[in-house]
Length: 320
Image (cartoon, rainbow, N blue to C red):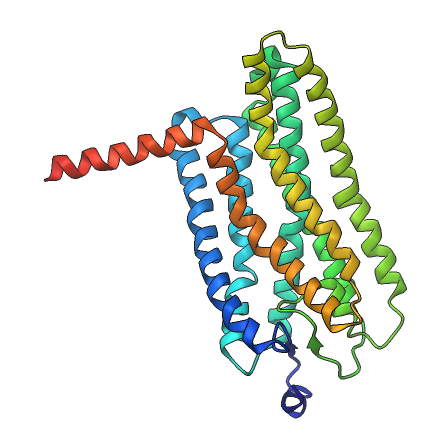
């Protein structure tokens, strides 16, 4: 990595170290990441298209799911293409503006997903605990407002953290110990005490992660209570299936995100590798799995897929 030093000292850009310390691992990762990224694009695009084309999916649940799929598309695209280029290149650079934009977009989308998952839990709470009032309570206007709150909250948090992070002096340090620009990796480049940034970051964690988790727990505690009171086993099974997909997505997303804080300031090479692989998991694997989880566990989505495929086959036969 030393050959980057003279060039980048005057360029105002950064070197994304990524997995350059493990060259054999990089080639395996390149193939795996390419496959996962394609699956992410196809899976999330399919959810968005189906939720628009099938009238049965014009409900609050699928409105929020389409928002989540669009978010995941942007989330992965903000980092993965750059990562693939860097793996194939020995230059591994990103401009200063590119790094700022990447951090702002990635953090904004990640923060938005935290809030959006709590909104989706609230939707399930109203659907199961107040079914008679569901269509009135979760009207299209409220759904749009809740989605807007999630997006505005997420990107407001990102704006504050991005500005505070890039105001710090770096004193010639520009090698980012990750494959994309993120706040913990950028804080490590600072040559001054970053305690104010760290306090602000943990405060943001409380607002963006802890409070939404609390709302999700509140929703599911009440959902479980309501489901237990359902007399028929078929009704209980349907209710649990309705929430199962969302709960699994919540566990994956928050589990990987919370675990990531254990590797905020990695010291050893093994800790660095674990931190990068964990970042890869919540930055790519989780967005890829989300549409699969909702498709495999949801009869409405599977029915919409079959209906769409059947319509396409019918059109092909008519043309023939």
